[in-house]
Image 1 (cartoon, rainbow, N blue to C red):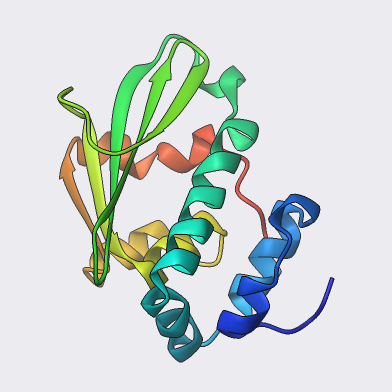
Image 2: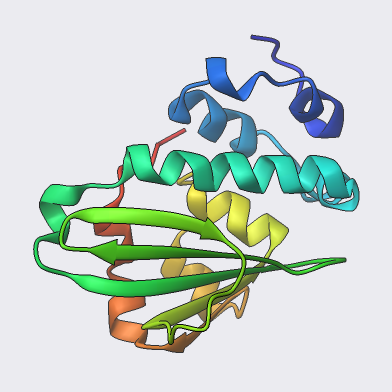
Amino acid sequence: MSNETGANGIADLDFGSVSPQEFARIVKGLSGREITEIAADEPLRARVVAEIFGRMGRQFRSDMAGSLKALVRWKITGVTELVYETAIDHGDIKVTEGRSDAEPRTTLVMGDEAFLKLTSGNGNPVTLFVTRKLKIAGDVGFAAGLTRYFDIPKA
């Protein structure tokens, strides 16, 4: 894997060959300007976000979910808004692109930089929330504990 980062490095990345820990390390090395460049390239942005959500099922800790049943809506704001939903149901998770008609237990709204940092383990959810980079609608207490349901990489 190349050590090149930024929009060009991410664009050339073969996500299938990059572990969550490697991806976390790449995100950690990105500047705010580089993340803005990635976000400005709509096809690249959509590819990166889709890859992250595609990995959520593999990083989901079904043992922690138990009998939990909840829908989490993710809104990533930018030039366009990307919406994904994660439906947790008794130890299973289903990730879908787009907004359903179902009522989410919580909705997480954030920009591209906060999303990349949060999902790569490079951003503290409490700090992101307090600094208003992460907005939560619905069950804030449930949202605060969401990280326990995923193996979040450490850079």
